Image (cartoon, rainbow, N blue to C red; front, side, top):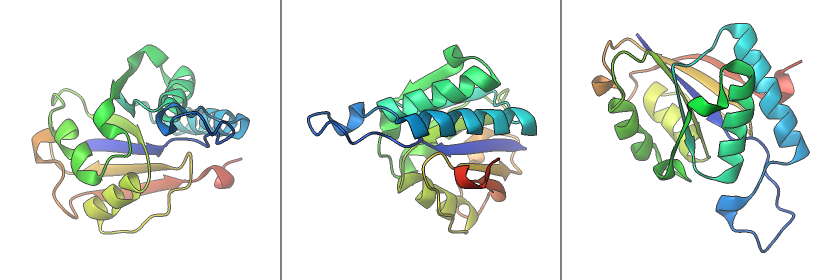
Length: 163
């Protein structure tokens, strides 16, 4: 079985209109929510074998803050194709993972992550900033990941629901 955690980046700043979208940093709330998600993952035993984040500043910062609590921020890999990606951008990256890896976390953006959840599970999930979804696949190889309706939606956490 393979496990995919999908994490939408936390709340990003819009304070500087001159700043490119790709470069927008997290707000104080975004940093706080990222740490909350990290504590949740640690408490739930959700420690991914592999970490992949969009290259956008808000996604990188989210991934690194969560990883600081759960594992090590040095484990986070960055993939430019995840910036504002559609579902079809994520699937080839997941399929290319070595089979020794059993779990991965992907930090990305909406609407792509919501669309990916719907495609893989057949369920629509609202994913506000810093929302975390856990999907499982019955497959033993990553090469089969990505068929419509092939994933089980195990859990969804939203920051406002966390203590």
